[in-house]
Image 1 (spheres, one colour):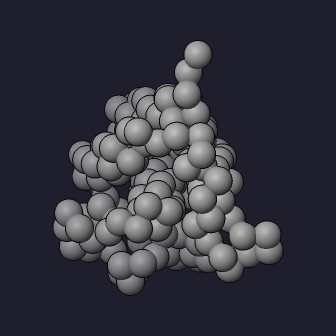
Image 2 (cartoon, helix red, strand yellow):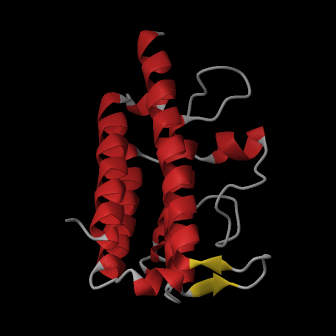
Length: 169
């Protein structure tokens, strides 16, 4: 029987497969093009879901984010503070995410590797650990990781949908 950590790892790897497929299928000139006025771009969606995975997993395990630790923040050179991950972004902010597919793929792969590393040895008892006291009730590691899964899976699907629309135009 699979462990909770193995199920989480499998879920994260499936999102990685979706992201890689989207980036492979999307022409470079379409990455920062919205599929409709006001819609999120593929580049922003992939950046955002990767930032959420990076931010939330690093925070839950008290680690530095791959974004700053490995120089991705400087490499992407986006007009946002280092802690930005997309929540509250305007459409102008969405349009400002203009990053080559190779960089999106590289950052996503690095974050996926960091997430996989923290899951090694994770037990079901570990999932009960409180990781955020700012909520009532406080957020456990299990709740935080399920929230991450929900967010990144939705955004990966949105990126695939946007890519499909752009591929028809």
